Image (tube, rainbow, N blue to C red; front, side):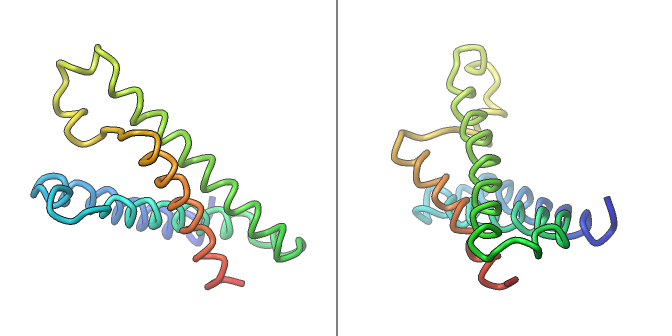
Amino acid sequence: MTNKTIKPFLAGLTVIFLGTFVVTFFGIYDTIPYIDKFFHVAGGFVIAWFFSNYWGDDLKELSKFQRLFILMALASFVGVFWEIMEYSTSFSFFEDNQLIRHYIYGGDLFDTLADIMADISGAAILFLFKR
């Protein structure tokens, strides 16, 4: 990995995780509805940014539709694993670990699907900026 690839990825992840921590710590999730969707859009954007830099020359050889499809698929792939992690915190062995449940918790099916759509939207936004 090069600095061109890793720096944007680490910067994006840092902003997302610090932002999520601040929003959760100060209880902003309760006051601003759907703020988590912003973080999912940002996450999809960062994942797509990482892979578009990592596979830059290889992606340029593909058609625009193929590039868009690949970036959205990668963002949704990461998003699905994030949602599985959120769902896993609902199991009984996490009931005693309130720290994990405080920062990582899943919603219902609608929330899960909306989160994945937000991840895909973030990748599409990056594609529009980085044609």
